[in-house]
Length: 404
Image (cartoon, rainbow, N blue to C red):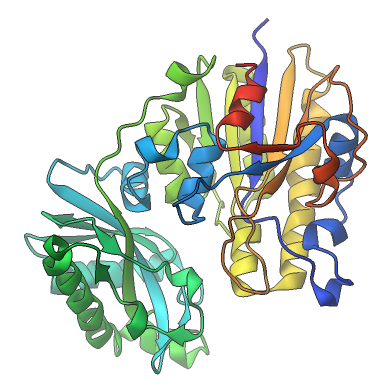
């Protein structure tokens, strides 16, 4: 009987002690009886998901969780999202994530244009493609504020600041800089594109309506994370997996799944926010696990709450993960005859205090029937320090899961 594995990833779930929570983290404060129970019945540890020399982005951290060697495969998040969107990146082409952001005065107010709707954003991206698209630059609409910019002949040796790293900071000092002299032309062209987008979007009808409704306008693009087409082996060639699936609301994770050889399963009502269809994603994961032996279930909500600096919301998203995902999955698979291993973890911390990612180690738990518990009683950043596995790094988690 082939054993099955499911990884449940709460993006950005880990945090730091917060004064308003009695110097506890959202994971410590949240009511999570099922994750605590699995930590108590299973084994725990910490995992460094970000190798030295790399920024703690979700693309790095999720590739690492899935057991890839980052220096070998990493080519930026743009190409990964392109794969999810069905946009082919050919030799001589470069892809970049292209956020719609909100600029207020000289400040980058937020990275998400107030979490603009997908329908509104699509109109803006289509407008920019008409006005700014040409033989060099092509815009492709994605989900909410997350879009794609493809550049022919671009040089990826650029210094780009992720917009979620600089909320409420002046944007001009963070415009794109060339790493090498050969990349000056690409950097200059992209910065000109950013400034031109601001002129075009300022008075667009979509933004006038958003402002009238008290919402943040999407009045600038912000391209970042450049790269070429990556060379990634499917997971079936790296680990004893015969077939697998990925379930996520965001193009980045779905794109990783495409290159990893996983079936991308779309769930109606999956938003990437706290209002996502938790029950639908849990049901889709269980159905996939009946047919396949590996499922990667990604929940974005806690990360977005961290980027907003919204402590109560982050606590609530963690509780939703426990009550509406983990409970549903555990209660069904514990009665299956086939052995199933559940692994739960975030990809990186997204502390509410600083509203961006950090590279600190994250807590993980592993449970399956018959595993010998390690004595940890709760699932959180500090309890995991006493876990059986100690401190792991990068692909060591997948090696443990698959006994390699």
